[in-house]
Length: 341
Ligand code: ATP
Ligand code: MG
Ligand code: FE
Image (tube, protein in one colour):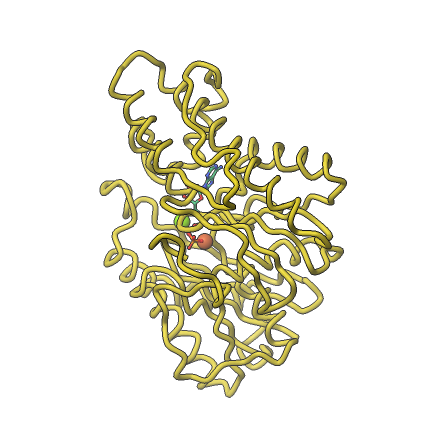
């Protein structure tokens, strides 16, 4: 089958054509960094407008790249949430309209499922169930991925997401937006032992993550003006790695039957985090799978691939499917201390 995937939940507009044989026939992406940079973060209204301006030419470009027309597509898949509601609506409504006009089935994709299944697009050997560390701009979770549409959440953050911590640290250090890659480069030049920063919840009996205390400690270190920004970045990144590894190690001990340790989401592009997880997996005799860097941050290939997997499972959706700002992957998961999903 051939699926058109559309993504517009945050600040990347993207369209892709993905085959059920894992062929990536086309994937196009338009970032909005320049539009949001003056504000130090994503401005929802600016994002929604930008999506609506570029999405149609982007889809046409992707169809051209793939050498196909809408008539050749078997289904249209679009992100229906979670994310900034204005942006989500642009991609969702466009996807539904194309499906309606071309008389094709429509697949509403949870953006988090896009991230969660993305490693299977590039690794045909990755089988269910696997233990997934989903680390992105809005989420930090450990999930047991048992199959398409079958997720058990083992842990989530009680305050900030990992990507949010990177972005806030970048802002404090004056490294601009988006912060993750900038903090990673600064960290590579710095000394990770320069400052002792907290490792929230490390060693805790409960399964969750926390990054708010780390962020406050970074803010104090910046204010103190005693340390080079590169050293602060390196010390911060080392603390994040420690927390992620500690929490993931705890989950591995409880996720019997998992065939692999998998990382996905924008923060999975971080090389220090990838290496530490790879070592952890090796320690526990688990395979380690991480998508290529371009597939970690937001894109439409992962939405098209989630569309492939859902379409194959017979999971299509009606054209009145709503856009959702919040949409937990595991509906059974309780809200943790009022924190997000
Ligand atoms: P979500 O997927 O939770 O809805 P999002 O879609 O905004 O959020 P992604 O695009 O998946 O998030 O990831 C973006 C996040 O990844 C940002 O917080 C960014 O700083 C972070 N990030 C990107 N590259 C790196 C890197 N090399 N190191 C650390 N963090 C990174
Ligand atoms: Mg982005
Ligand atoms: Fe994302």
